[in-house]
Amino acid sequence: MHILVTADTLGGVWTYTRELVTGLVCRGVKVTLVSFGDIPSAAQARWLDALPQVDFRPTAFKLEWMQDSEGDMEASSDYLAQVIDETRPDLLHLSQYYYGSLAADVPRVVVAHSDVLSWWSALHEHPPAESAWLRWYRESVARGLASATSVIAPSRWMLQQIEIHYGKPQQGAVIYNGRTPTFFNPHVSKEDTILSVGRLWDIGKNAGLLLREDMPAPVHIVGADRHPEFQSSAFTVEELRSNIHLEPQQDEKQMAQLFSRAGIYAATSRYEPFGLAPLEAALSRCAIVASDIPTFRELWDDTAVFFRSDDAGDLRSALDQLVRDSGLRQHYANLAYGHARAKFTSARMIDEYLELYHSLMPAGVATR
Image (cartoon, rainbow, N blue to C red; front, side, top):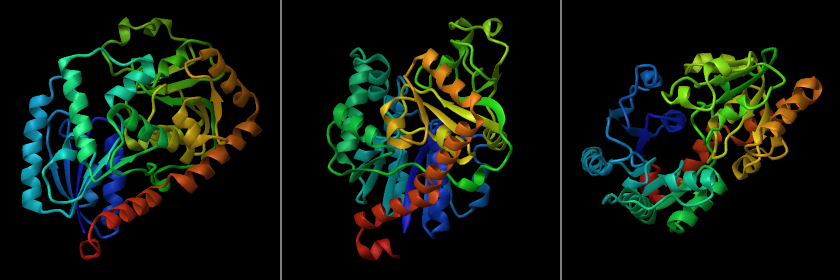
């Protein structure tokens, strides 16, 4: 079986792609990987060094959610069609909606990682203002979804959003994302610290919520200093409380160390189609305090402590409960860890994708 996988290198989709491609190759699947958005750094692409059999084609074409991306999307579609003609894969596994409408005589799986309309609506509670670009974006996404053989979302909530904003796909299903448990260390003695991943300017991740109140333990926010608008936001470096620590972007090993030491992970998102960081925290045996949004309820109900979304006071109270009671914190840490190992591993994710691939391809192709 030969699968052509597309990815982008600008966020969590790249981590997802690593798990997917590595898992497929380990199961004997041939993979051609085409990336968009930017050429990956040496550190980003290091995992591919262990997979020399992967045919990797990095590009810097813009992504469909970027402004003024129309020309790049047309050019990248032409490029992708050439790669398909050259490599002749049995199935396309696409992380961009636009390519779902490619004229390729093979099954096309489109994965709905996130999208502009559901992001905007979740954060603003009304649709975005109409514009020429937004009309192009909506039509492009709807066309790709309607043309896909199968549309996969990482949560039921995200699949519902696709149906609300773009129409019901001809075949839709949920396959939860997964991570490799051995990448994380759940056995380190925990510190009385709170960890969160998300830049302060990102209103979807909403990490800035941790700055609105005095939190009951030291807080480490990773990725908080990467946006030039930070200094003009509601919080300046001088205004930060003494127990708030802003950490620059970390590499994989550094993140694993931070997760392993943190006692609590604060999942503050207001918009989250899945959320890899809470999963990585759970696999590191952190207790999870999560924003009460539909996705986190779907994924972590009964295994996390929830607070009212975007309510800093309620977040502080939830964190204080676990900081004060180490036994309760350990209880929720064990619940999250066990749940993550049972539901959200990369092995389970690969099993479900392979089952999907086999269902979409003729039997002779699927077994070769």
